[in-house]
Length: 152
View 1: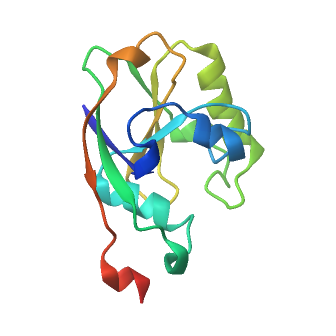
View 2: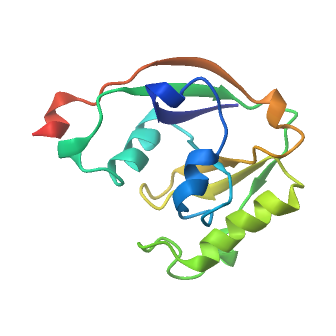
View 3: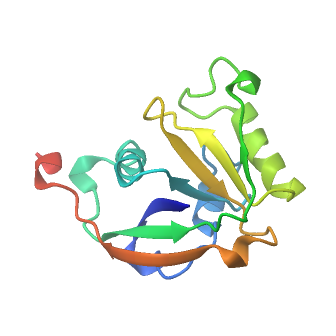
């Protein structure tokens, strides 16, 4: 399976989860390392766009293509267990707890979660501490400038 991630060029050579741990996000609390990926390039772009002002959007993004081997188990998060306001901003503790529990239990290497930005699309959360992590590889990365009309 191929998933996608936008990254600043200086961080593109490795996957670590350290960036997410510095601030905490929808699926992790501060201090928990997790790697956010998307099921498409368009979703990766949308996920970045909602977090940054288009006026100050850096121009050095690269698109990472990450291979998750078929033999790696992926847990699908059931929407039934999500609280009603799971996609609110600011992020709620309950969704962060779901991601933190996924990381610390370390039973599965990847968790598929619904996107809060694009209904019907999915993000993939990678556990950088799981035994299968070393089998997940960046197979390609390339410059990914945002369309100039987004800066208008």
